Image 1 (cartoon, protein in one colour):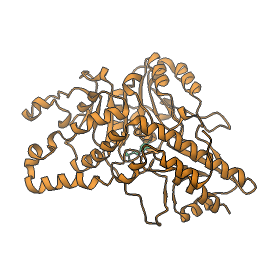
Image 2 (image 1 turned 45 degrees about the vertical axis):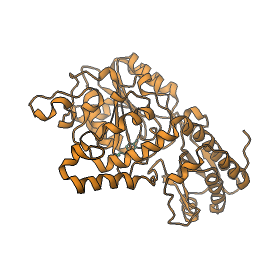
Image 3 (image 1 turned 180 degrees about the vertical axis):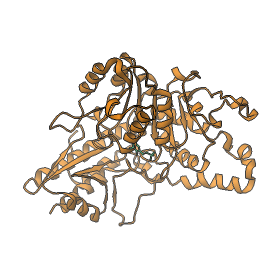
Image 4 (image 1 turned 90 degrees about the horizontal axis):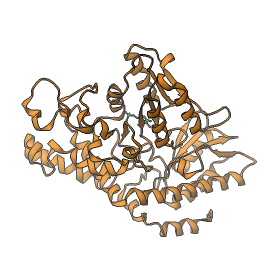
Length: 425
Ligand SMILES: *Cc1c(COP(=O)(O)O)cnc(C)c1O
């Protein structure tokens, strides 16, 4: 499709967008005027207008029923998390038994690693991407130390080749083969938070399993953003937060995936809590842990209902839009924004230039574009912010932006180009 950097063209694209009315379902921040461009849904998704009703329902039931709300609320709190399973399963390509919404992302990664990182004999190493999100680095490092090993020896990081920004998939596969019997676990961010690179999780999982390793993914930047088929790919485990693309409130509840092949494996080591205990006999309060089947067996505590209510409000919107339509708009919107940035870059090449380090292949990225600025630095980002663009700065010189298909428009992309050009000094 031929793109044009004009307001008319952007508006025409919006008029033809089958998801255009979904923007109305969200509160768009207005603290800097009506023409703000919010491109940080990869960091904190926007608030659906229905969220407050969902939360208010629980507050009202709590006021009216007190403890009886566990069983008598309109949506009984005792089983509230079950309301989220089907819709979540559709988003990540799982069976309902394979997912549960609970805790926070970093907590879940620890809980899952307790079960799936079992260093034994010479099989002790963990493979992850270099420059992983800091929390993931601390998780991996502390898990290795917890088992009495040193991360210098057991942690293997895979980097882009010299002079490149993106990790080559063939290098990951090669490294997995090389590590062979020494590899205990592959744990990688499905979409890299810094570059926006989407990894081929199917191939990585296959390669990991071939050498006898377990494979898990951090999907913080993937869930609700890209198509996932966790079940079909055979991924052992995954976790993601609810507050980025999934719009489920600041610090909101997180998701966990455990493949069906592990659903009945009560021999897996795990840190247990009462909410993971077999539901039928949970209240007999017997000693000796008997886990629920599937992902629910990794729950520790009873559901934080207010956070779950916010999550449910957003999941209903995803359900209505469907990941297919979201994906189609994502590819078009991201391609248009890429075109705009390149156009601005070409016309201002004497002053500075923008290099998009995110892969240009739509199969290797989601919504996010990471722009490396040559010639100007943080001042350009600050100017951009003053104009009304909410984006994200990463040292030394990268701006991350994410046009989110549920609420961003082609006109947002056009306006971004306008502001970007004005921000150049
Ligand atoms: C956002 C993000 C986190 C945040 O973890 P919390 O436990 O929710 O604070 C962790 N890992 C990655 C890759 C992220 O993008």
